[in-house]
Length: 447
Image 1 (cartoon, rainbow, N blue to C red):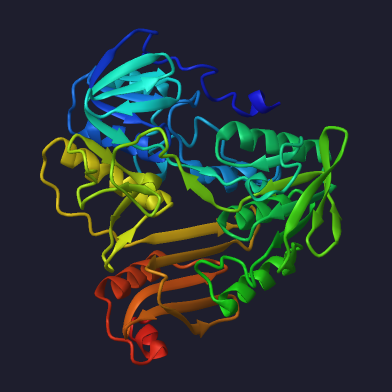
Image 2: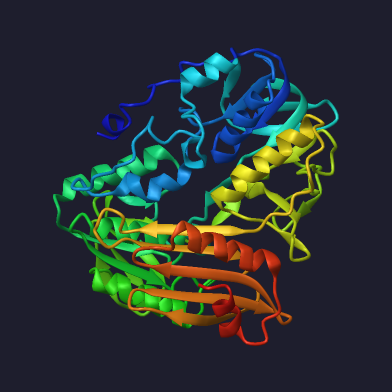
């Protein structure tokens, strides 16, 4: 069934793949096959890089795709008007570009090296892929992040059947298969109250599955939301049938045979379930490449995405870049993946781009299969103090203030912010105006 879900894709790469050999040389070698890699290829092609000059090292069996779809439209219930399936969401459709299928890469002369990069020799300018070696002139590291596994924290049983971590398309396909087997009934537990947990909970309850979220924090989205924002969203979820247990931890996944049958909580409570989804954070994939300067768990880069090695660039989840708010940021979101990819390519090609002055942008869309979707858009830096400034019947807005200036702004509602609203949010945060009175600053932006 999981294969059937992917019937729109090539079962194997029908691409120009490197045969097993001692060395294949590329002018531009990209390591990683996710969002950032796809957008880097888009920019390289747009700049007219010749066929045969670009290679991608990837362990995935399909070309890069818009990964956020996996916890959004991919998980929509069968009754939904829109259900994402490959090849429909290959990059770069999320950024308004072409759908880069295997045929697109073949037409552009971009080669795929199937496998996982295991080491980089910076002096020799080579990347080991299994027993093979690829040489490069310029290297772009786009390896993304992997889900944190609760087994790392001593939780037992997360390897049981029907316990899911969603990062790649086959994992989402397997979750859909498990939901179909439940036949519009059953119970699910979502472990984690961040993006992945919220998006998966919203999707699963739409299948008719009794869905419970469990997380240890005092409110959902704790890295971004304060208590008031969290409660607003939690109330909306409760109204749609999602149960939420805060301040508790899963300590063990229980089983019947090989499959999960429930979870045991630190409080002693046991929750029965036939499906569990875990979303408790991610860790950047950086271990394969030593010898580069590091910061915030990622490869330290300058405003042109260049690492401490002038021939190596890093983009997306794995780069720690100079923040517009001072210090260094590492951002795990698709908007940064897209924009950092373009910046790195232009710099690698010597096209002298402007320094990267990224305005962080986070968003989420949930319950889109229903007539009452919820959308939030956030621009800026969340390290300041959050002030809720506006509340409507089905909407809420807030700004973040640090050292007397607006550093972030959010609108959330059902329906979500309009394009005009988003433009105003962006302008407000980019200006970083003084905010003696948070509500007045929000009102001045006409939000």
